[in-house]
Image (cartoon, rainbow, N blue to C red):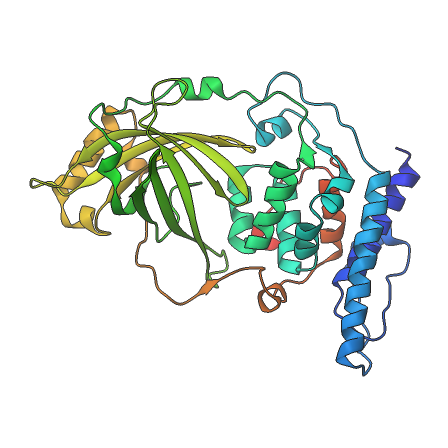
Length: 400
C-alpha cells in the first residue's frame, strides 16, 4: 500500500476515534490536521456550552456512529495480507516471535462483531485494554498485566468474538502443539474424578504467570462426563487500587487425552479465549490419617496465544500447609518425584478482603477513570492493519 494511503487510513482512524471518545459537549470540535504529528497530548477541550440532555445524547450517538462508519471505511481500504511465519507454530506468541505478521479482516470487526466493538470502543478502559494487548503481541505475562489493569467482560466479549468466533485476526500458519503434550509428568494411577468433588483452596502455585492469583477457591461438582469446576480468583490492579473478580466454570472429562497420559482433560474460557488443558494428579492424601487432604496437580494447556504449563496444590482449608509441617514435607516430596522444584512455589494469598472489588471497564464510572491519548488511537491501528507499528521493546502496561 502506498505511504499516502496508509497515512490517510491512520488519520481517518484517529479523527473518528477522537470524535467518538471525546467528552460530550454541544460544540463538537474535530482535531485539525496534520494528524500524523499529533502524538503530543491533546489540548484541553473547550468548555461545554449549555445544552439539553436530549441534545447531548443525540450528539453522542451521532459521534459514535460517525466513528464506527469512518473507521470501517478506512480500515476496509487498508486491509493487509501478511505472509505467515515459516513452518508450524504453537500459537499467536510463537508466530509473532518468528517474525510473522497477523492477517486481519477489518470489516469483520464491524460487520460480524459490531455489537462487541461498539460496546468496547465506547468505553475508554476497554479500548485501552485492546491497545495494551496489541502492544504485547500475545506475550502472556504482558497480556496478564493488561487484564490486571483493564480487564472487563466487555473486553472478554470483544476478544472472544474477534479472535475465536469470527476469526477477524488469524496467523494463516499451521498450529501444532502435539509434541508439547508428549512430555507429560507421571500421573497417579489411583486417582478418580470423585477424589476432587467439593470445595478446595488453591494454596501453592508453580508458574507465576498463571498460578499465583489471590483468593483461589475451586468447587467441583459431578457431571455425566466428569466434573464441572467453578473457579473464583482475583486479578489485582498494579496500582493497588483494587481487584477484578473472576468467576467462571471449566468442564472436565474423565479421559486421558490424545496421548493417554492425563488424569483428566479440561476445557473452559478465560479472558475471552477458550483454553484446553490436560491435568496430571501427582500426589494426594484423602485426609483419613494424620496427613490433611491435598491434591498436587500439574497441567499443560493451550489457547490461541500458545501453550503453557504449571502446577498447583489444593487443600481443603486455606491454612492447611501452615498448620501441618508434615503436609508441606509430603507435598514437596511428591513435587520432587515429578521433577518439580519445591523452592519455586508461590504462596497464594487466600485472605480475600471484601473491599476493593471492581468490574473494570464495564460501566461509565469505571470507564471514566481512564483517559485516552493520541498514541492509543494510533496503536489501535495495529489490530486492523497488523505490521503498522513496530513491537515496543520496553512496553509497560502499568504506564499506559
